[in-house]
Length: 491
Image 1: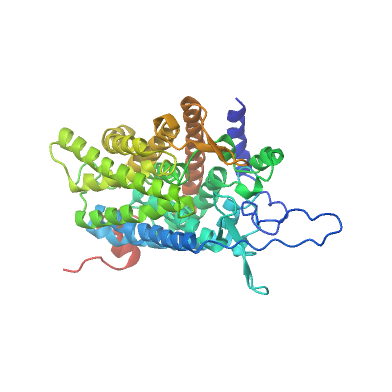
Image 2: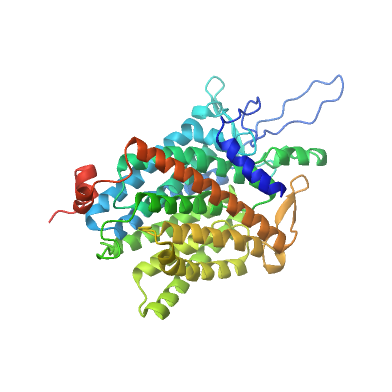
């Protein structure tokens, strides 16, 4: 009951101005090392500034570039190949410009609201325009905490890495209403949804004070109380099952309903115009996803290695499961199905990547291939929405499946690593599978409600300002010519 009241209170928090963070010199989750208190009468010696490990820096910069590649060109080509030729460039444009827009907004206010201390729902304003990270007078850079005591990254590296997460999340949504939406409406929607859905969910799931803030057993409860709401609950999301995939998938479904079905949907053939391009996009997504998942360890360590192998294995299992399922139920295995299976496996293993062992990767990947195949066929038919590129069926359903199974396979008795329930002593532990699955389900529920409500309001605002949909004549001729004045192919 207490958590239900907390969830309801969330919407009150979303409707008011964001509470400024407590006065501080730098984001609270990035504490600097401090020297022990000096003896009375002694001269205090300042602690040396933390020095980041160059290997970790190189790894995280590489992972950031890999996630960028996932979006452009990976996601753009994956989506572009699945639409009709007359709408190819419109999808590429929506992904390319949305990515750029969100990166800019992230550096203006997004990072600050997601990853600085504020309240349980939003961060504060300490990092507006990335201020306070670089001191030009001193030539000094602020450091960001990782998951190990005394290990840091330059904060700019963490900013860039998380910027790619925010940007690709918004790009995922455009696949749900492809081929009939106004470009201007997409941009208006993205600004609103990013601000009021992505940022609070990211803060609630991922913001905490960093391991070095847990200096004594006496401050554990105080530090936990400053974290995001879902972090306080104990929800596990290694790389974005809730923050990225469920968040985007629910927004996509809302958009599919509000924008409406494509003209001729269910009556005319709307087959992908270039499946090889979609396969190339899926392959780039798989390759880049190693940065997405393994990079979320924030260090080049054994957790990154675990996330890497789990991402590799679960995706392969999902491809095989989707292919076999399609072969059995439709008579022929398709390349489009195999590519979709790969993305489904990647989505489902995302929240679990560093939170489960190899047995979990086998099960999660196999389950994702079969469950998402069902969702993109039978469930989609039941829902009656024209989700053009199956954003809901793959990302929302795959994300929900992965989030719930993370609660199961995190258990050490099922090969999982457990989790730190005591950040002062840094000792791993685990309660019960049922308890953790319930926590995961609550996090899923919060994400669904927040994303759904914010998406509905954001689409309605965009509709009032510019209208959501192009005219029937423009839709029939294609968005490439009518929205962007160019065509993908010349004959």
